[in-house]
Image 1 (tube, protein in one colour):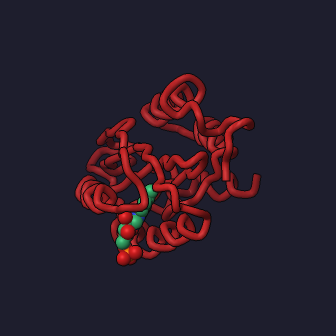
Image 2 (cartoon, rainbow, N blue to C red; image 1 turned 90 degrees about the vertical axis):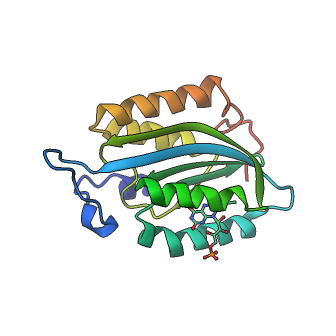
Length: 172
Ligand SMILES: Cc1cc2nc3c(=O)[nH]c(=O)nc-3n(C[C@H](O)[C@H](O)[C@H](O)COP(=O)(O)O)c2cc1C
């Protein structure tokens, strides 16, 4: 799938996101937040495109990268960047009437590589989410990322994200 090539060029350009590797480390300190939420019923593809447009306008200046999945009326978002930027965005997201019932699936702050260094915010369809995570798992060099991805895949197959990424799900 064409979008995978874009995800994991191994020549990470940390400078484009202002990432400063910590002294003695190859990678910067990254805050990662993964959540899912329920889209308000009026949300359609055009509304999601507007969210993506806002994200692409704002996220680069904040050093935030990640992906947004929309399917079966559920959002799932992976955010990574400096802690203060991600926290600030989450505060904004809490007040956004386009979704509700935000459930945090995982938060971490670690010295590690970005998982989606080239994605200011990429929209991934529910049917592609499993492939995206498997692809990311294959390319992850960092064992913390590997562990996080395994957990997400488990969530997808057996847990809270069970409705996403199934061929029988009622996706976009
Ligand atoms: C599910 C969801 C994900 C969002 N993700 C982002 C994001 O990654 N970055 C962002 O700037 N805004 C995001 N937004 C929109 C923000 O809540 C807010 O509307 C926006 O940041 C306002 O900026 P603007 O005035 O430039 O559009 C998201 C909204 C929703 C409902």
